[in-house]
Amino acid sequence: MKRILLVKTSSLGDVIHNLPVVTDILQQHPDAHIDWVVEEAFADIPKLHPAIKQVFTVAVRRWRKQLFSKKTWCEIAAFKKQVSQQSYDLIIDTQGLIKSAVMTAFAQGNKCGMDKHSAREPLASYFYNQKYPVARNQHAVTRNRALAAQACGYALLDNAPTYGIAAENNVLDFALPQAFVIGLHGTSKDSKLWPTAHWINLAKQLAAQNLSLVLPWASEAEQQRALAIVANTDNVIVLPKLSIAKLACIIDQAWVAVGVDTGLSHLSVALNIPTVAIYTDTNPERTGVMASCNSKVINLGGVKQIPSVTSVLDAIQSITNH
Image (cartoon, rainbow, N blue to C red):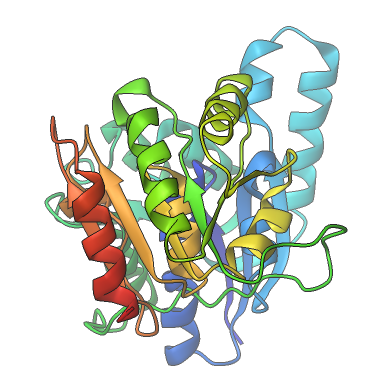
């Protein structure tokens, strides 16, 4: 049995992009024991995968803000002790950042990562025992799978990725509409947003099909945008603030997902929900949603492009045959 530790800490989309690595490894090594190091905010994702045995959490984002706090250094020491208590055959850092490489160094075993020409931060490569070239001009999912294949010694698989997660059942204490579209409108940068007026127009078009639009939110700005949309429509539901695990349960019940460049759009794909992803500031060829063998997706837009409501509705019809 191979013992393997995966290091992919953040962000949400990046963590989801790493899930197919688990499936690939288990295809070649069915009895592999796989653990994962992840940022505490995104720990729900590897926990949704039935093959992940143990999840080690870090809090780099919080630690950076409290670097001189005794509590911070106690937490770092506790993580280091916990992750070093067992030896691994392979420790694979698919993130390629100095912070992830340091965490990799804390673990006991053969440390693997991208070489200095491939890693997002070249200095990270100096922390690895084994360093591998991984072409940069590929989708993030493909880069992760390529590194894992080299580290584990098998040929890179060219099939569609399998994310392997399943939403938890019976974790909600409120009812949802029988048929709804999940609108994943929140994202990390304003330049990635789809105009609020477009969301309002989309909701009105969905109402004509007896469909509701359900809107999650995480920040105050996202909540205010959701409330602005609901104020101009009569078929929109604004959810309470929820954990990733509970959002996964809601997304899993959606008829279709429409989302901007956000980790939740990748989550909907990982859950095999038909997904229309809207890009206005990034290139979807590198980080767009990537369909699994069981999902249908369409990426719309690109840098300085704002897809129209009509194009989104056409895409929904295309992937749902409705």
